[in-house]
Amino acid sequence: MFFLFSGEGPTDLGVEQAKARVCNAHQFRIGPLAVMVDQLVQRQCKYSVLHGTHFGYVPKSVVKELESGLRKPPKSMRLSGKKRARETLYFFSGARVLAVIAKEVVEETGKEVVVIFFRDADKSSAGRGGFLDKRKSMEAGFELESFAKGVPMIPVPTSEAWLICALSKSNPAKSPPSKYAGVKKSKALKMELEELLGEHPSGERLRELVSNQTIDVEKIDMECFIQFRRRLEEVV
Image (tube, rainbow, N blue to C red; front, side, top):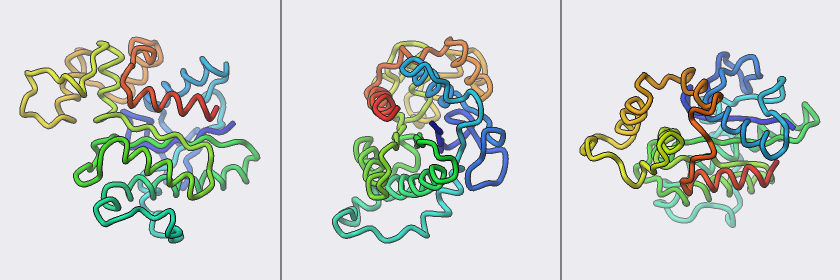
């Protein structure tokens, strides 16, 4: 099995270290959420995603570049209405690109490919709908390209919420500390995470803390995480 990741940066799934359509295992700096994926798969399948070289990373810039070359979807699969298109096209098109690339990897490697498609729920979210709209749009994108092993990974509102929940068992999306009132939610979550850790939450440090289970994936009980985990378990 081959895992294909696509995220936003070093504090989520990781970051590319080379210019490539698909960065191989040596061109990809692994992030904390990729380690979480590995832990979940190991617990279910006794198989390590990150052991060896059977994984890769598609940079966000590549996804964006390739969206313009997608074939026009049939009318039955098009997103209805201008407002709905604005809300979901970003996630729908991204999933389509990753499905196309994944099928190329299947041809090249002869292995089953699982796509982990990460985007923060609040990323450029103005006019892009809620969590369920975004998740459904990713699912629709994978479906249109006839790809059955796509996994939406959409923390609400950002990946810091999952990490905070793993550290404190609280749901910061529902009950942000009052001390951060008036601060943009994504920034407030970064501040809260740094306060919990007592240090700057760099990608390298977060990866270490997930690896040693100081940040424990089993403590994350947010609905958006549960849906991600359930789908991951289905495809592996």
